[in-house]
Image (cartoon, rainbow, N blue to C red; front, side, top):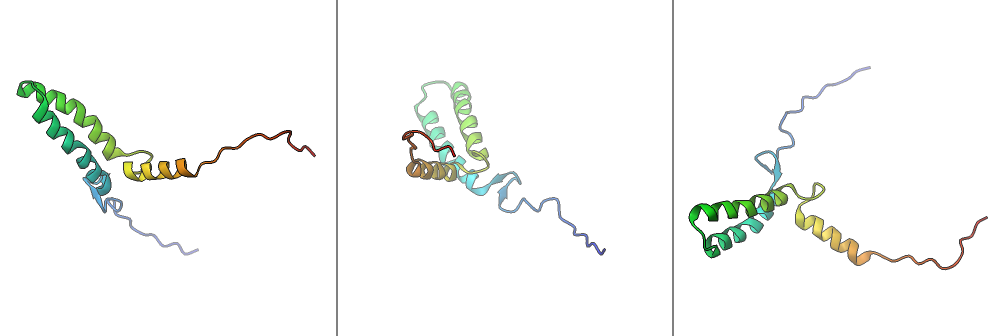
Length: 102
């Protein structure tokens, strides 16, 4: 038996990822979700700077983290598209009498 060995680099899955962890698509979605929230918090909250910062980070960190991680290894938009497709194509099964038992 002749076995060949292949060397696989440690970072072979890092291609197309930000910081080696997050897909580029997830990063863009996180930015698109957090930047408007950041702007609104800074502009509209009537508090001092420290309080604004704490409130803004309390809102933005979970939203951005959720967008970076995604749902079931999918980005939020990809997951939402799949869910909407399932929602449109689902069917309802009705029970119409007795089942045939042979």
